[in-house]
Amino acid sequence: MKRPDTWEGQVMSFETIAWLRIHGVPVHLAENWVFDYVAGQFGTVVHPAQLDMDDDDFSMVCIGVLVRD
Image (cartoon, rainbow, N blue to C red):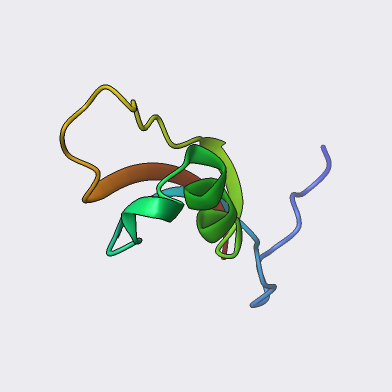
């Protein structure tokens, strides 16, 4: 029977989803691609911005980002 390797302090990488709330973007720049670009600076966007131009509130957007470590 093979004995499993013991842990000796190796660094183990992991990924997690962080939810970013972006607000304060000027109204003339409030487009989904702008919010996705900003969120992309923190990791891989897995749940893009879903800003609807028919909404009356452009003050905030939530975006899911996959981040490492």
